[in-house]
Length: 277
Ligand code: NDP
Ligand code: 8X3
Image (tube, rainbow, N blue to C red; front, side, top):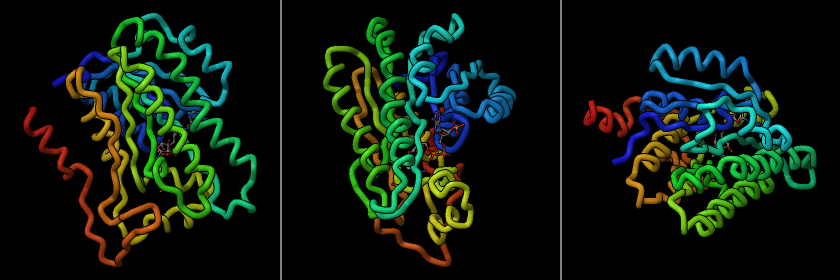
């Protein structure tokens, strides 16, 4: 089995949710981290916490993935010693609004497409050539169950995640003659700041999304990525689709007043650590 010890992992959207959980988990596994997001203050606080817990090497790179000029300067801007990226995690993403198509704000469409699709493409374009020439590297794209299903009022968000899926599959074909692996992790409902961002700060509406059910946590998703990344070099995990147990599809969610909950650290992955420690 491969491990992450000493591998340099760049995570976009590392200031919150799934990206932050990945940063914490990968640091615990001995990875060096390049953490990107727009909110540098968040990244700084997180880096301090991770360094204290795991003595990890971390470089912070404030970045808006929609800013093509800045993305194109990524490699030039990274300090020496940080330009050899072993793993790129294209995680930065968002949804805006949940209304019928005729009521959608077209600015929301543009923001989702620029972040979830164009941002992912341009980040990949920066990092991939080095991976191909070094004959080593993994691209992890964060898709969604919405990469495969569409739900009412979510046409454009779902379209962006369908695009992520098409890009992952196409890339895998185009890189089949290289050792670079393309992995997609596609979660269902995951409790992060996603809904707060979708509803533009309306916390009561965001909290309702997860009422009476136990969603996935960022750590659940990070653990799936860790599994995929630590397979031997000849094994390319194409996609892991993760659903909360009480979510049967994008539109079928069982809710109950007496929801049993499993603390994240009690998840099956605990066994992984117990076996290794
Ligand atoms: P969060 O809102 O908690 O995190 C989103 C992250 O993306 C933040 O770190 C944010 O950082 C960053 N981000 C957003 N826009 C940009 C940008 N223009 N440039 C750089 N960074 C950006 O949500 P999640 O953790 O849930 O989302 C992470 C990914 O997971 C997304 O791609 C989302 O579509 C996907 N996903 C989420 C699911 C869920 O139910 N939560 C389910 C399936 C997939 P900052 O604002 O500091 O820039
Ligand atoms: C984000 C989760 O439930 O909106 O991909 O599809 S959901």
